[in-house]
Length: 155
Image (cartoon, rainbow, N blue to C red; front, side, top):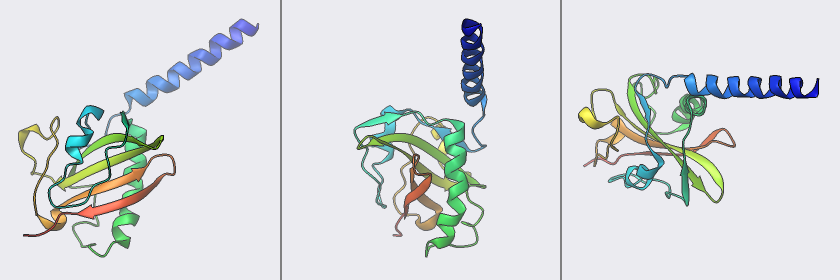
């Protein structure tokens, strides 16, 4: 009986893990490999967090949690404007997982749909200037909150 219960528990856990893996990312979003985190964080005209000591691969549920926290963070920022109010809708997003001091973070690189060229799904998009059409988000995945928001400069 005990081995049957263990088998059922293992099957259930496996099913949950497979269901998470099967969840699609939102349209316009991509998770880049952790090996590209330093390159993605090398922004030209805005601050970005440190690349940390390691990377991790966020799943669709992690990205959904970040995107759910985004509207409140943007509304609280002084750069808030009408076209930012709909984010992440209408935006392309590149995400990468970062481990800093043993804690998991997700960095999001946001840019208006239609920008980023044909390689945006596999290569970091770095743009100098551009103002609020380009911004970055630092999300504490363990605390479930945005801890940093930075917009590109102008000019």
